[in-house]
Length: 258
Image 1 (cartoon, rainbow, N blue to C red):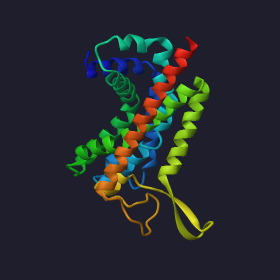
Image 2: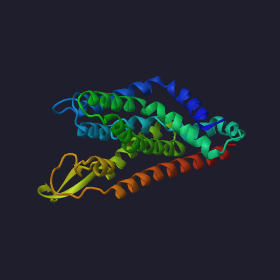
Image 3: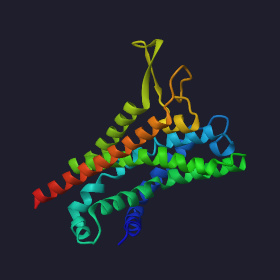
Image 4: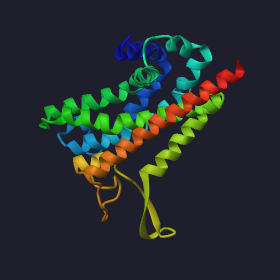
């Protein structure tokens, strides 16, 4: 059984959770509404609108992923699915990757659809490169954030009961969001001489010309392409490490019960 077949099977299982689809779509549309300035992203040909939309999609919809993926590592161990998978002639890392890819594809589909539809609108308004730009933003900004939120959720689910794990995962996502997406800028009149502003994603800074802050136009140094790629790799590595730890904890707890 190949990776794509496994991922497709997990996609179908995750797609049955229609309530999560609805909430994920609602947050994706809310992200679209947040970006309204002079017009919606699909009503302009300015790539900056597409870039801003991608960054909002990397902040709001992952709240749903954090609440939805608490069973990602724990459920296969609890139900014995992992033992069945272990008998298949497929490496464990491929099985785990397929499980994550299939489930995450379902949850990220509304965000991807919103971003690509807006890219289509931008192409009609003169931005001929909107579609490849949207694909880069999806792969470099939206999906890594989704993977990190899912990994936090899986770890919480491996450590805590389901209801408590969902709350803890959402809180952990907001904590991570504040830690990495907000930065203090020294100013006169701020709290202790500091005001906090939203940091633009390094990929957007390095490859799309975004200013270092989304809500602040003062002097600041933008990320270089090397720094942006390194930070993206670090984010993905953290997500993979969290998923690996979650799987190890889930297996250990299951064996203890037996």
